[in-house]
Amino acid sequence: MKTFKEYIIEKKTFDKADVKTLNVLGQRIFDSNGKCKMYEVKWRTGAHPTDGMNDVRDRNENPITMAHLIRILKKGIPQLCRRMEEFMNKKGCFIDKKTYTNLPFTVTDDADGVINVNTNTAQNKKDYWLFPDQIPIYIN
View (cartoon, rainbow, N blue to C red):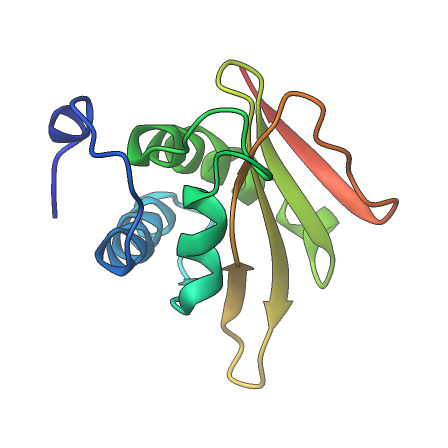
């Protein structure tokens, strides 16, 4: 896994290896937070997430980089852990006010008592609109 400093000088495309890195990093952040011991991060690894994040013309005003997503995970997951009951079995979205990167997610629980945080893709738009049932977490 790359360090944060290694992502400062960024490649311009997002690939499946990056998705796996985000899964590992997200899990480490959850594990290090005292309230979030029984959580699993699941980032969909199919073609859609990487295609959408690399699409600068239609979906994104600027390319999404790993540095943007790492920033969201490091600052957003602790906020999510503090408000977890509010998000249970609902949709949410991390909204980074600095980079305009938006990361929608859902929180579900399974039969084993593990709470899953699932996300499919991210968008980089200043005027991103939320669905009526989506709860925002703003990151400054």
